Image 1: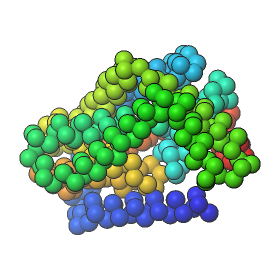
Image 2: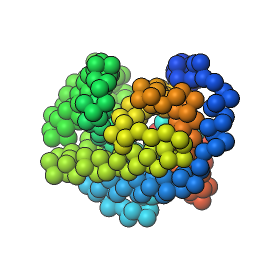
Image 3: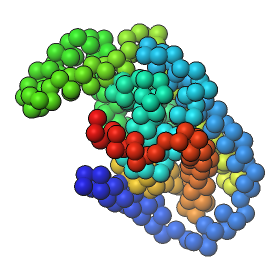
Length: 327
């Protein structure tokens, strides 16, 4: 029932965002823009995107090293399966699939895997905020996004500080969790929960070195610059032009919005990019056609490749869910 409620809330949020972004759209102009687009520009954009996926794989490989060294060629299919799962299933199930596959194939505990995934999301959020903060002085839209920046800055910076403290003092963290467990969790679950917390803290090992933290951050910057480059390539398929800095702003806002609960594939929250482009004089129909094509170009290739790797791995998503629910 809780899964159904999460899906229902996500669909509702997506519907609200779609109405906000597409309200008043002139469909005839929208279809004209789609029909006259030069889709050859999608090819270099897709190539750049997969370079970014490879960079994501290297970042994860770097974060997993304290647990186990796994070759990049073995991790890349797992990353693709994870992103395909996020695109198809609700509640970012792909992240759990990634952790489940590594447990099955590399004997790394799921809770430790998920710790690295959570750290990835925190650094991604911080880089998106950095993009927004960097771009705002050049766009003259600062006041309009002040509340937005403050809200997400508090969220991601607070999360990073907490995780850095947990990583730096795992014994203290386990003691605190143990005290909390006495109040909140029935006695029979204490040992199992303590084991999960210990393994989760193991997954934060990459945050114990300042050098490693900087490496993760700079890799995250590279990943999102590559993704912005895809935005730039796809833009050339349509008859409008904005600066790379504006696309950094759009990328930052769009991906921060996809942190919110939404329907599978980030439908609706991603389309908030339409409003960003409208702020810079791009007509709504043109902004909508570009954003929807960009969304499809980000969604379809990685989803197809991830499904191929999923099929090749002979992994049943239902069996994985059942095993995780029973663990």
